[in-house]
Image (cartoon, rainbow, N blue to C red; front, side, top):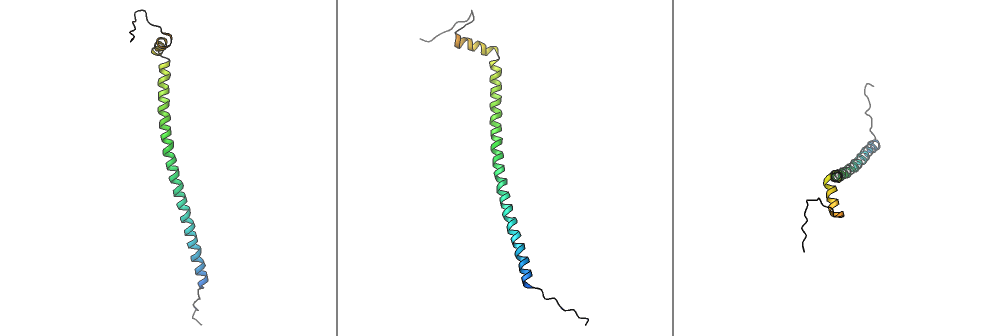
Length: 97
């Protein structure tokens, strides 16, 4: 009686464990693919937003330059000449016929 009986492994138990492992691998693979696609969307969106930020920064710089110009003496002189027709006393205007 010193001999042990070899346990008979049930094939149904192994099959169910194998099925569960394969199922989990499939689910995890699908989730990884979805995350990768979402990551690619975020990268594209980030590039788009970075480009918009650059455009808006350039626009802001132009507006700042224009604001400085509006506050300058040159703007006042240009507006007085073009809209009001004013000149300095020693200034001569040549017009084409």
